[in-house]
Amino acid sequence: MSSTQDYAPPPPVATATVIAALFLGVVAIMMTGLQPVLLGGLVEENRLTEATLGRLAWVEAAALAVAAAIGPRLLRLVPARRTVASACFVLALANAEVYLTHEPSLLFASRTVAGLIEGLLLATVNIATTRARHPERLNAAFLMLAAIPQTIAAYALPAVVIPRFGADSGFAILCALAVAAIFVSFRLGPEIQDPPRRASGTRVWTPAVFLGVCGVVLQTAANGAAWEYQARIGQNLHFSGDVVGAAIAADLVFQILGTFAVAWVAWRMPFKTMLLASAVLQACIMLAMPLVHAPSAYIALCALFGMFWMGANPYQMSLLIELDQTRQVALLLASLQLLGFSVGPLICSFFVSPGNVAGAFRCAAAIALLAFALYFAAAFVSSLTPVARRALAMK
Image 1 (cartoon, rainbow, N blue to C red):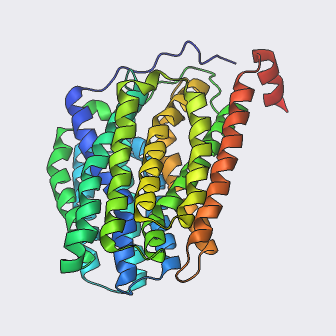
Image 2: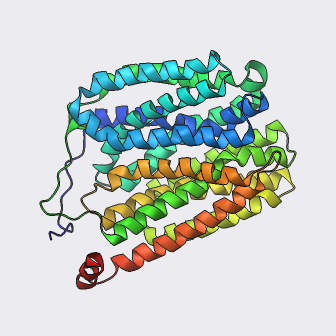
């Protein structure tokens, strides 16, 4: 069995391709940052129920995760620029479709199509990130860039735009971004289609990798559930729309601060320690969220949640790269995160009742603690001697 320790990743893609991929990635995950606001707006307009909100979020995020996983292979088989440009056109239509119907079944269909296209766009930034010299830093930079427009929109939509123009107006913003992405797609270089190199005989899916992957999925599932119901818990606690909008915006601002800190200096810190600490702290925040009574405490908890959520994501990439230095598993990181992001709201949606979503946060906290246990197990297995690892793998 060949070792992955001496494996050399392929050279990074060109700067122009990285910039284009970063923009396409921002467009791809814009909806994930606005789901609580936009889908919550549909609930307020009686177009969705609170339980259906979590399931609709799951459909789009699940489609996004699947497409992001198969996207790199698809882009190697077709002309990348024209395929991505065409996909952006379809995404614009899927976002515009929300204006045409109030039928939940058609909403599910349009968000499924949107998720598939968003996953293909996200695949471009996944390729660029995993081939970077310091992938955790580029991943943090991408998350920081993505959070900036999300922050602006998350505050402006519930406070100004939706009360005046309705929840559909938020999807118009997504439509405009998709149209802009059509033109950016033609800046992608041909190297985005280069296949990853793999050392002959390399074994990728070891027990440690499997444990680490499960930990990533579960931690993101907990975060996704708490994020989807963050606006609803504020409304359950009878906070005003301005307070809820400020809390979501504070969450996104601290996402920027958390990822900026990682990209600037914190990427040098021990990633295993940071992952373990983040899982525990996030569980504590989730348990505290339904118990607050002051708007300032609610906003503060949302801010801390955003900082630990996005600040931990680059360390997940560091974990997967250490466990599999061919970086093939790291290429799936976004898909794994989105899988968790979609499954979390689905699971926790069964613990909510009309006007009370506190159960979703308790469920999310339990999932975060389970992720802590899996991270610990992955660190333990990866620390075993090579002989012990081989013996464990043969069982």
